[in-house]
Length: 480
Image (cartoon, rainbow, N blue to C red; front, side, top):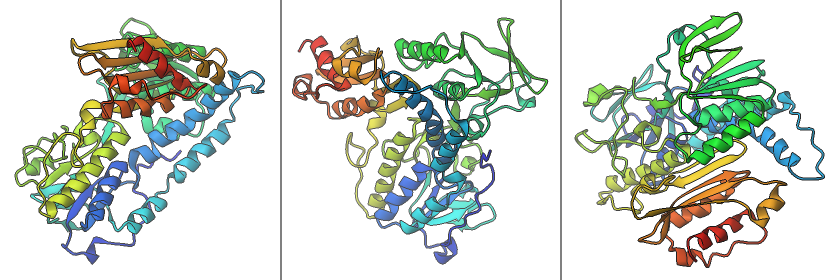
């Protein structure tokens, strides 16, 4: 297992010494968000330095989105095959082949390809941990002091939250990084947390052969989604042999032979070879030097829709992605980063940038159309609101029971919710639960961002026989 705690060995050929202090923009953090911010700044004519202390590509590429989906996909594909009559599939997974597939997808934790891309895009890469050391000044440990003429963009992402549980700090546990990079199936796995990471990893490792138990403090899994989503995922986990404990909190954690024991507040206990702590994430700002520019370390960076950080005089500090606390998903961070890179370049050219909704220079979708997919089986996909939050909002729920679904899988089970603004007659939220529903999400996203009236959506005819036919039924339920 390679969790990548140490700095990657690949060294960029370009160095900041070639630029001296002739730098326009410094981007701190070279995950997908930082890469996008840097690329857009370069595209706008900015001489840009990208600083990273681990691997270019960041958490998503090596320890989160990519490896977790690589671990989930084989089990999901096998389950889908069993739902189609006539397909011979015993459902057994070859864990060594799965791990090899995962390793290939993360480039064996080697970021050489990402470095080559960055250099090819005209970005100067600097290795090391960067900290703000003054106004428009960034100091890199063991490296240069950078004084960009225009902007510093913080894209340092987020780090796991460790709950305050007695004994937890004294026993070896899995973080999300360990869960996505391990190359041996544990005999048993306890998962602390019922959010996205918890449910995805519980199902992935259960389907690889581990005995899994999930401990969720809330009364349902996926508490930020509609109740039917969490219930469907819980039912699927149980079908995979996962024991789901709801309304349970860890009181104490201790070593137990070669494993871990979790004592719960109800007096019961759970023992397992491995314990995955998946209780959320927080912005990675604790060691960034925020106090040097008048901000509080450890807190999210508050930004406007152009990405400009509040309460820092001079208009030079920007941020995008998880570090802002706005929309903690990779694709929304990349979207915000593209906005920031374009804004910095435009302002450097002397253009007036106004934070007008839905303009080229604003991350407006963060407020109205955040998309997310939980890649369990069934999948959960959502955009915009998951519940009504105004008197004018109407909730429309229905099963995905169209012909396309019944042909997609024998006994297909799925559900969808639309949240409709009755006054404006537009969709403001959608949640889908079912096999392969992630592919339905973008249609809903376009409808929300485009504010397409229901009467016009009626003319977007879904092809027969596809699962998208559910849109016709939803619109009929809306009175069309």
